[in-house]
Length: 312
Image (cartoon, one colour):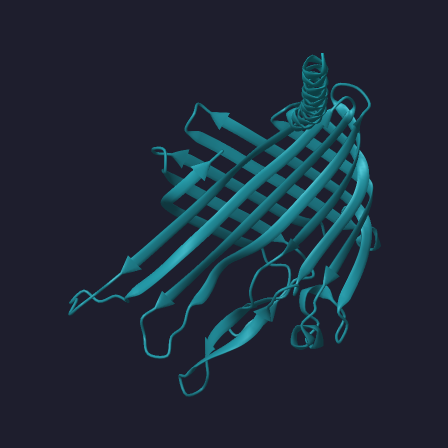
């Protein structure tokens, strides 16, 4: 009887342990299910690309310059949607450099951009949303204007740096999304801050900031268009256009334009042909060309190349 009693107590203890373990597993399963349900509301996509080039010449009669360079591109998106709420986030990073193998020549920046945009929306109906946008745009490294002095020697003058300029945009308005690929946003209430942290550039009044000041604030209307299309499995077209007008300049005068396009053609799993362009028009940005400074010039940049590309 004593032995049987001891055996019964042991079995009860083991049963209690098993029951506790089952209860713990059930709790962990609920937590995992909750996390999985929340992740279902997120859609993450993007493209990473790296392009490199090199030219070597030895006794080349036709002439030319030896050079090497590379371009890196990242275009990432993380979008959340649940019920009437939506939250769209986009990060675009581009950097490129080139070096000509001449005496004393160093790497020169040929492409530099860091932009993050976040948009929250609350659905009015299936196609219209009350929305708020925050946009951050700057670059990674300093840049220079290159010219020749009276002796024919090359000189360089700094024209940009990290947070010089930095553009911050914050706005509320109405967003129209006729489908998942296209969106139009309009806001009559938009604030824009231009930051120039570099003392050297602020002393020159660069990027529309008053001389010796480090920031400038504007208030006006704002328009943004986004489009993302996939043509089959191999071609992706992504473009966005933003317009801003400071009310101090008039309702439709001196409109700032920023238009970006990325076209990617996938050749195979890891190789793709990419075209990235950007067009900017801003009355406040000074352009140095032909030894003189000019305002109100259209800026255009294109980066074309084939290289390693990963999409997800």
